[in-house]
Image 1 (cartoon, rainbow, N blue to C red):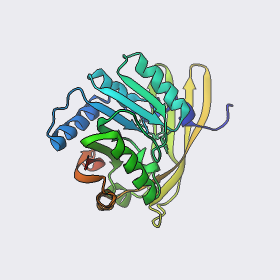
Image 2: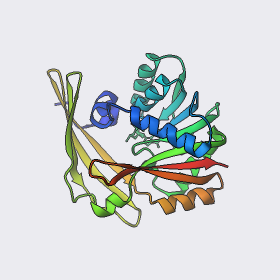
Image 3: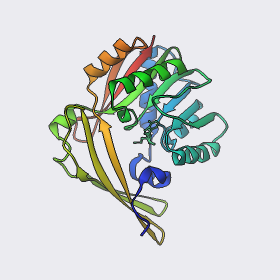
Image 4: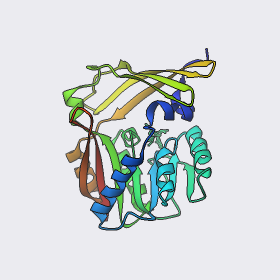
Length: 259
Ligand SMILES: C[S@@+](CC[C@H](N)C(=O)[O-])C[C@H]1O[C@@H](n2cnc3c(N)ncnc32)[C@H](O)[C@@H]1O
């Protein structure tokens, strides 16, 4: 047995287990949010992906003719994204960087932060440091679109109250995720929730046990509105809910406009 490594060290398995195979409609939704809130056309944009993970979204944006740049704290993710994007073309750059302390040479029309990356910012001062970096990397009136879990779902179905398990298979590799293997209740003072997901990978003849220890910050919309307003770097341009099969909101895209 290979031991319990964190799944971020294995981007290929992470992508199979956690990233939607068909990102076309979500990417189109992000571009529609951009057009609606900026009043500008959603074509040939320069897009910065904060905490890009495997670069799956960047690949989709690139295929639509946009220039993409992205960074991640994990060197394995950066290497994986680089290999993926170079297969598509030259219209990209990737680098190792921290949400709280990064800088770009280029200026971007649109910054994005998707699927949990923003929730690694635990403290208000970390959010402010991050917003300052994004502000510096955007063009004037550039937009920042952050995807967050819909906060209401944490109240209706608090962590620990439901079981979440799934199995995804791609190209003969299957990744089984037990997300609620160990999940703690929300720690309301810090607005965090944490847990341990168990992950079983079957890659040909090889079986591996991986895990994902997580601690995420829960953000409420009015709180985010207050933080971004007080930061002086952004104004709140709107938010757009995305609905799941149950008819209830699952995620929300928060749109900030650079001042
Ligand atoms: C849940 S994944 C989401 C990845 C990607 N946004 C997506 O939608 O597939 C979170 C990513 O954030 C990265 N990350 C965590 N803390 C970070 C930090 N302080 N700076 C940059 N990246 C970070 C992790 O390495 C991981 O790739």
